[in-house]
Image (tube, rainbow, N blue to C red; front, side, top):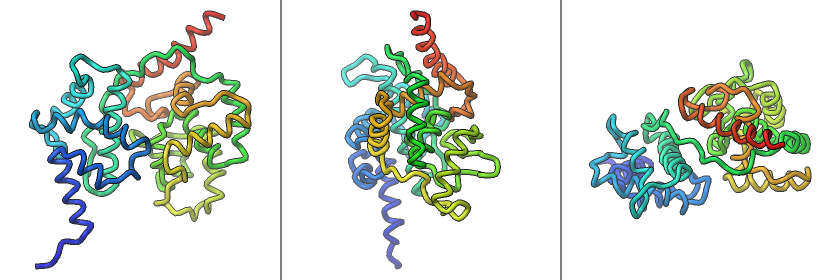
Length: 287
């Protein structure tokens, strides 16, 4: 009898860990590479699903039609009763969504059972998104770093999340149409974002750029944040985390769900736009 190929053996073990809701074994086998944020934080966000799946008879490998409802319910539960805040619910659902995306990238799953899942809108913040003048100044100073300039243009002009930004490969871009295949949709990039991406692409070999290679070299969100922090100091503007630039994007551009990377134009997209524009409108009315 022939031995099982090591790659196949690893795949079987990963799927078994997912099916058995064994989070410790799953995270240990995947390692820290897939976790763009702190792996410990990601583990904490995934625990509610893995802790309850066996008792609820939920198979995380092959979930049934009621899976999204179950995820929504378990994502809202606090450890000691009650419900958690909306931002925690969003973070938990996003962590599970990211796990499925990674297993698809590894060739272990065909589809993400959470594709199109609704997340609650982010909780209202007292502070507005960054001022447009500060963002413009930041982007001007970023032009000397074509990679960073392209990344910032995608985040600001198309509300791109960091996890999808870091997963982009050159074969997800169609230079002829300016379309970019994202996590939830196909987005037609606006002229500024496409031009910045094309300038960066030219330094990577242009049409000869390896299609499977990731567009951006930042290995994790912290490296990108560090680059933005250093740029903010040079530009003499406040630090702008990627999440704040995404909020500013929803405030400053007439987005459709597709241009902002949402799965559809439903309640989640509309609520996010109202939140970003509402905060700005409230502050404007006080001036």
